[in-house]
Amino acid sequence: MATIDLNADLGESFGEWRLGQDEALLPYVSSVNLACGFHAGDPHTLRSSVALALDGNVAIGAHPSYPDLLGFGRRDLALTPDEVFDCVLYQVAAVKGVCEALGGRLHHVKPHGALYNRAARATSPLPLRAP
Figure 1: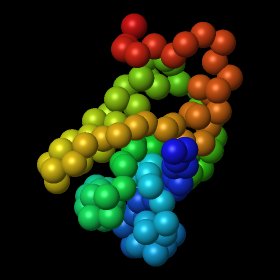
Figure 2: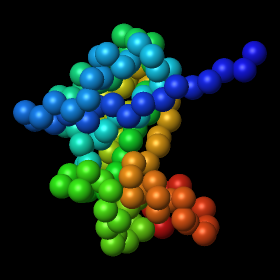
Figure 3: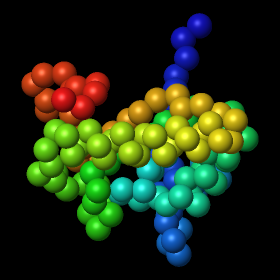
Figure 4: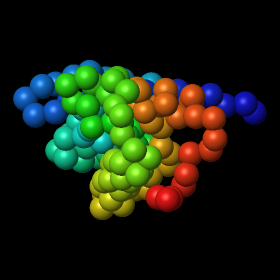
C-alpha cells in the first residue's frame, strides 16, 4: 500500500514571539521539521516541540539553516564549506540530543531556506564530514 508523508515545519516560536499553531497542526502530519535556533526556535521551543511530536507519534527532523534570525534563514550567506558544516552539525546535534533525552530519535534532516537552495544548486555531492 502506498503511503504519503504529510510534513510541516514547526518549532519556529522563540522568546516572547509565538509563531504558527503547532499543536493544532500536529494531528494532521506524519513528520515535522523542527527549527534549530538559527532561523527560528530556541531551546525551550525545541524541547516543547520534540515532546509534542513524540506524544503525537510523529517523525522528527532537524531543520537547520544559516545563522540568520533577522532574515529567517532566507538570505544566502557567504560562508565557507567548513562554516556551513559546523553550523549544520551544531543544529542537528541539538535536535538529536533533545530527541534522545526525551526518549525519541531523530528521523531526518531537511535544510531550511537559503541553505536548502544552496544544496539544491550544488554541482557535486555535499560532504558528509568536515574536510
